[in-house]
Image (cartoon, rainbow, N blue to C red; front, side, top):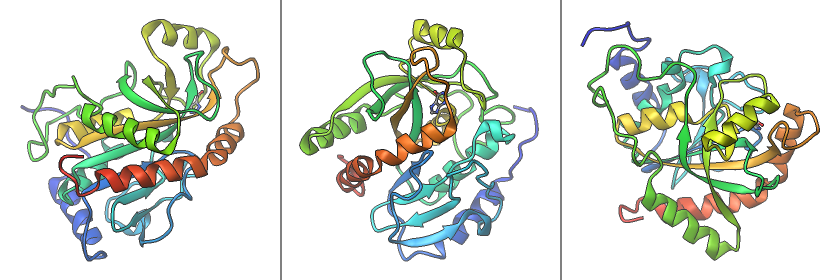
Length: 277
Ligand code: HPA
């Protein structure tokens, strides 16, 4: 199928993957992307700055560090790029395809999100059961790269059922309350209006945020299993009366750092290198 030219050539992904592979003795089969304010969750391991990786887009959002850390059990991305920064969706998912070439099988996408569901509170950890993405271009738009996957992909289980089951078991063991919810994507960078939040609620969104869905789509395209975890950093606009600020979002994510680190470490321990999770 002909179509719009792609930003990257297949050889660009290979170049980036080879650079990363050259820095570590072993690459685990699980990767984690840390959302806003979560950049300090992991420190031990091989650190590689995004700027040193060929073709890798820079993370420009505040609190997104822009480095990856390879630990025994997971490849951790501290900082991601967003559509609102001006990138092409294909650039947002560059690293997902590099992960595929590195042999990654499971990807945990974390994010800071606004709570739309009134049963949530700030500080809740919510497991993403599904997402709604009605706006912004699609990372798979344009000529399909058959090296990664097929043109049309099934999204019935965008967020892996078996990984979700493992996440609930880990949370229960730790005594952490883990809620379920549908993530509604908005391209940002403005926070939503109260009317938009009412619409999102009617459409079935429990959480609202500006990331994650592009990466999930690219991961499903190339057969990587996905888990999504949101930290509710604020109640969405109109649900709470106070005006939103990114400082509030970052502060709430940071306040939950300890709980999230513990949860992620136990989760990684459970699913990394384990085909049966
Ligand atoms: N809206 C969109 N994105 C967000 C929010 C929000 O309320 N909180 C954190 N990221």
